[in-house]
Image (cartoon, rainbow, N blue to C red; front, side, top):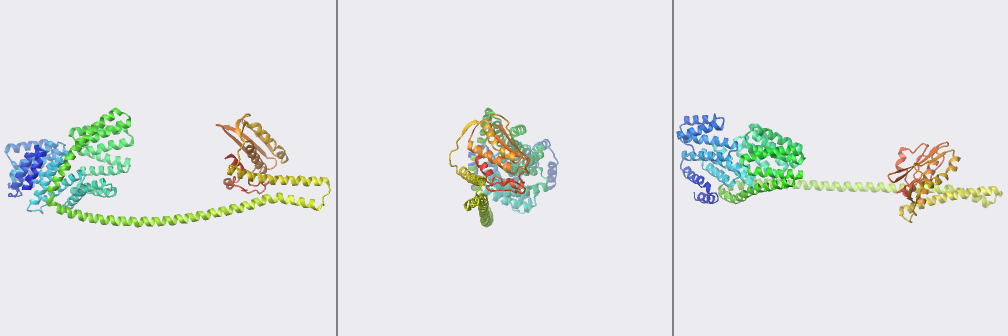
Length: 636
């Protein structure tokens, strides 16, 4: 009793308007220590009043019955009517009327010394104040209800057990609002266990949803999904439209956290449609604001604005500061994305005003949290045991999870190293094979290219050395052959040196500027004799007669000569070679085409490889495999 007096004095200092209610609570405690749990009303009269009140379908009819009981001075009828009528007011978002009605019912329960009805009135008042965000009064009423549950002589009564669980659920929600998730988790688990013992599907659904919200706040999405699905199953079992709607909201938030906008919209729309036919604007506002928020994130500004307008109107009607803060914050984001800085600023300021109002309440709530914990000392031992058990289980679970993850990570790391080692080894072996093959091909090809002209030169030189050739015309022919083979050998060496020079960037090319078309005419003309000997038609068809550009004559000559020589080698007799030019976007293009059989598809990737020679069967000429590689280097 002394403890309660100290606590009430503290509350009355913070909220003078609640002094009368607190005095009633003190009187309630005093009388409850000496009176029975049930009021001594005739059983038949009780049954009649209960059935009369339950048969009423609307607020108007309940108000008429309440007024008649006041006129008749019937405290029991007034107490029962106020309990049901207050719940109807709350469902209709008329919270102040609900508080007034439940306080009147609490006064009647005090007069009749009906502890069970008193507990219901206290829990209803706690719920009303929680909806308004006044957590200090909410905690006071819920803890008073829990205290009376502990004083009941018959604690096995299902009705008493249910009211105890409702008190615990209300207290858990208060701790959750104060962001004391750990303590809220412990209380919700006690409440869930109580609902399971009672076999209440709706009660289990509520506590599963509360536990899911804690996991969601902690960023544990998988656990949140598990508890929300349990909640949905129990709500469907209980046939609770409100519970099903809240579960759709929870699913939508989880999808929204994962940026799955369409799935989130589907869940929020399902919740919105369920609550649209209800008068419960408080719970309807959540999916309405969520739809506005997700449409805004998707860039659907018209749909977002439409839902915002609906939410603003509803939030103003019920006077919800929390929802109005969200509404104006979304308006601020909407105008900011539209580039309307003035309206964005106005709505941001309005949002901060409502947010600051809420935060002022929350600062006070944080101070009141100390008082709540002081009052709950008698229940703390039980909660601490549950917390320790839960913490041990969670610690063991985390330990096993971390150990498993460490083993898996170690195994994955080892497998990764082995795979990388084998991959690197296989790659190195492949590179070594390629190098060896390239070196072998190089020596084979270069030996062949040097061997032919050297063999001819040596053969004629031996003839000259033996002195068997005496005629002047024979000597001249041998000299011609030796000179031609030497020139071929020298060209081969020069091409190798050119490739080496281009690859190592040795030397400074001599750039010239002028009309390149006449220069090309001269180069093509130098191949006309060779083409006529092979009975090949060689044509040069430039698209323009004048193309002034910067070019290196030596490079240009080698490029064109190699291309034309390559075409002559692979064009059969009576064939045709066409050389064309085109100037496109300051890029000068040279195209050399011939009527030969073309390059095989399997040879295309290798035509610019040094010494690469494709299938030359039935070809008259045999190239060195150097020319096209040199052309590529000069062009690049």
